[in-house]
Image (cartoon, rainbow, N blue to C red; front, top):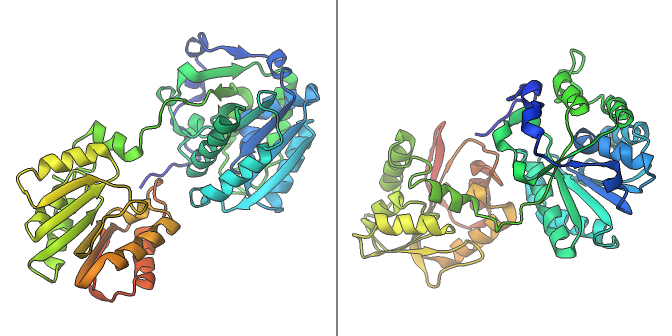
Length: 421
């Protein structure tokens, strides 16, 4: 599980502000900002925009630049009220639009988010409008999703986009900052003071003895006021799939060959299979092929697939001595093999699929299962930042939608294993 304590800093303010780190980073001035006809700033949560670019917004007010703020989460509640108050303290007359999407769940709302971003920028002249959005490398799922969707729309429409980091200053280190794409804003003293007053408006989020649930520590807020406002150019390089990068970096990214958790899980899956031999099997998400090699011993034919080319290469090498095992690159559920199978195995995969993708996958599994066939589901019971759903939710959805009955169920503190037929 990937977690971060919002009240504990990884890197000190002094280390971040070491002048030697910033000597070669270009500076953007008020004159640069005045070259735009307007600003649209996207924030995942009310307060992101003030923390990340509050000084810039205050300077926009000094220049009488029209500003629009689009907040992905929140409706007309307390936090949106705090945002409006903060913008008044910044002396930034701004239009505020709150999309009302679920806090912490933007990764499930990518389509709705993309449509809203597209609407917000539809009538904006390309090149004349400055678009600001959270940096996708910020280690927060909502920031990552919003930044990615805004970047995609801006690339299509030709808008000038700059990305602002937020939790980087709390959770990250200087090695995490892409310095080659960074610039710093020359925030005026007056704008900095207005930013301080604006951040005080977010009383529901400020951590204090009277508000222990607040996630903004005094030190984090002080860093936002005193520290540099950094803007990052979008990364225009072709993106590398997360799982592709993992398998390129290691031939065993999850230590499936050595960890007792993995070895035990494979042994239990083997023991749970109701039949000794299967005619034709399908394994979804084969990674480096350790499970594939074992399944190949129980199947006349086995098709093992993965979305990452590097994983496919590793699995093919691992099963090279088993001619009955065929390894192919395939992105489920958009791609699906022909024919029927009397065994389908889904292990440690379903929680990377959004609910709608998993629903489609379940339907395709049910449609591809031969009479008398079996489906194996096995997933870790924990949580991680890159999960689209929990393993428990995936298993429950399968039970509800597949029309199959459970034959085997093993549930312990590490994982849940079920066989349906």
